Amino acid sequence: MDEINKKLIEGKQRLVELGKNKPKAAFTQNRLPPGQHEVKNWPVLDLGIQPDIPKDKWSLNVEGLVEKPVSLTWPDFIALPQVEKVNDFHCVTAWSRFDNHWKGVEFKALCALVKPTPEATHVLFTGYDDYTTNLPLDFCLDNALIVHEWEGQPLEREHGGPVRVVVSKVYAWKGAKWVKDVIFLPADHPGFWEVRGYSITADPWTEDRFS
Image (cartoon, rainbow, N blue to C red; front, side):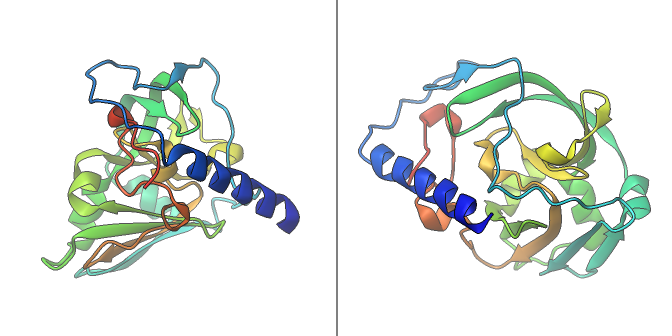
């Protein structure tokens, strides 16, 4: 498994090198971002690890620069205000899927629970596969969902179940699968792919794939 992971990572880093010299697209208001094609299925992409986390063993730690850090069990998480949202999903590997139906918890509901301090400006998400990714706090408040259902069904393990992060306004690597930690920070902290050459901002509409 370690050798498979190494090859996957090396392959994506080669894409970074190839993509660095490609001119970024101009901003577009089109629903399909530049360089993308629409798919009807939901391709599976990961680091070669798909943790199997039973709901009774799963927890979500919310900590860092907050007044009330918490560790949510599954019943705690489900007891939070639940929302249903429909949005598009854009992968940096050039496919997009329209009109995904999600159910879960808005990021702002987590904030209401833990109360970030004024010093908090960024968020680092980690997964049970040790994956990490980063976003500005303001962006999370505007657009991040912590989801446990897709198309009316429990989120499957291969797609990050029982719980993953979805952020529709950026490329999908910014949404950690099998999420276990939400850490509020005083500054940006690049995650797994960001330190390997992927963009910090990850805007699909300007084709901002690589740093």
